Length: 124
Picture 1: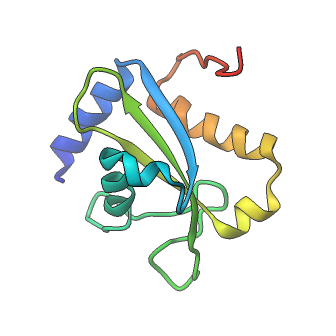
Picture 2: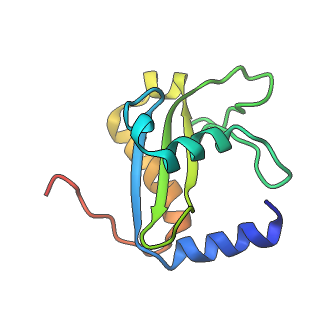
């Protein structure tokens, strides 16, 4: 993906309603949801515009840090086919961060994609 395409995708994300998912690696949803499965695979493919890292501690998933993905954070724009923004949490962060801390990190990342966006509580 080149820089122009990445910027275009970010504009699309900023102006769309987003469905978000935070799923552990190996979740059965990946067997049934090709888009999320492909996004998770693509997350690990480095490019000039993308170097996968942990959104909790910034450890690289490619380098000498030895970090492994434990969970993915997906943002899927409603009504836009084939586009998924993907981030990852490492094993160490998922083991040491509280659920509230994981939520705060995820919210910080999602706010960059949707500045001024409102988050709906799915439990309501």
